[in-house]
Image (cartoon, rainbow over all chains, first blue to last red):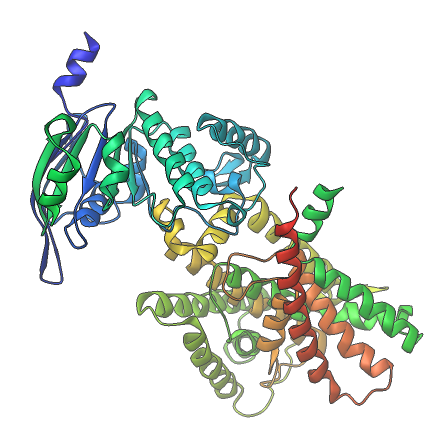
Length: 250
Length: 320
């Protein structure tokens, strides 16, 4: 029963989203519906409006017109914090992690467990951070040496793994991944793809942004194609093929 | 064993600590009175003044910004206090509160201009270096104003045998800042902001507010350090703290702060300031021409950064 009502209301619904940057109409009335437990591939050439769309969904930028509904409720994503509080987490291409900081400190940036809280300040609960980050990392089947390892000692794929572990730890409902396989080796790419595929079984919907169809096609349930600020196609995987999608993009 | 080696080498202040030991041992051999009680009293009596300023500069540097105006704020704050007492008849304690509040406003201004107009803090605070120094001269009217009676000299700089009260203030402030920077969630935001501002703001950290607070903290500490020196000298000189900004930056960098932000520590800034003061004093004790002081500090800064870079690379190559 519960699953029926869940299915009736989309997890995220955007209605007629518009965005202008200094006179450039970057997003032209995008309507999108995302369901539960899906991997959605968001593809398109450079400048198609993919990053504008995800910046709005992640709370980093705000739409100039249009509405966003989350679990059936109209929401205003005024900051990354608001989006994260709802359960929308974003992993950006280059900046998911602070390289000099340890894995444990990175996982908890901005959401540190603290003791002796006074106002918003408190002392870090190091023991909890270490314990929980080990657990979070195990959740994505990453085997790292220690939660105190600085992130800049990890490979690109391991970093993405930690970022995904972070999102899962905080019970994210939607995970937006911005070009997560860029600049990764083939082996690392496969690892990240299997992380993303594994998210479905955890009840997480992910939006996978890329311009590499070969990465996103095998693991997606649905593919959304954007061009010039508009959504030009929204297809179930069964209805389409890599060749067909390539034609749409170029 | 490897784990311990790695943990040790990963500390940003490790090379500064080694250098401090080498420098102290070297001076002790060269000038055997270096570690005498009398001389230690001299070093420990003046070290807190640079030390306090260096703490602020270090924390600001970790957040990814610079402050070149600390030397001028170091002079302006006590000058304002002395003039408020002497000309406006305000009591010493309220005057000190006003002075430190004014210092925090200078930090606020530095931060606001830097972040609002998105210009390098190097430029903003270079401008403030001249502005605050100029105001110090204007306030003094060209002469050092008389040192007002009833100033709380004992509270801040009374001699307690080997040390002065200022060392206790310094260690107290350092302890609070240690917890603030290295043990609190706000400290985690400072490191994140300086290490990768974009990542920090993507994770919902208000990096602008973090930096503003660091700018203000830096100016307040510089002002407080200036007050302490003024109380020790019992004179408010318009030339106070000339060149202090560069010593403070050198202390922070020697102590392991990365110029680009995201790396550094409170203990490192303390060791850096102690090193500079030890060299300053040791050269005199060894009867070397005092003009070599700046050359030594310069060489030390360069060597420290080379060492820090080398050690950091070695540490990350150890699989722990």
